[in-house]
Image (cartoon, rainbow, N blue to C red):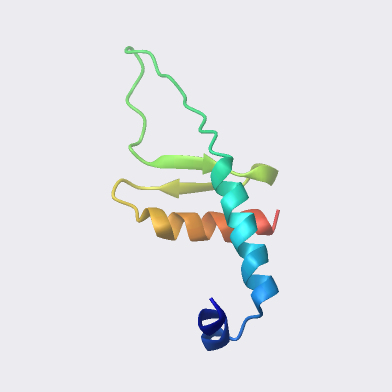
Length: 79
């Protein structure tokens, strides 16, 4: 851990603060699902993630989950 932080120019306290923040975010895994009846047109296959403040992110099929986690982490930190 010390070498990792040193190579990236971050202090250990900052590393542990982010580690704690990301582990807490991972624990909050509520996913809202909208059910569409059979008579309605099929919705887009994209996944829409609604954030605080009315913002949303669309993820198309085949998205990179790690990349999405990083984007959401940045967006949520600015809420």
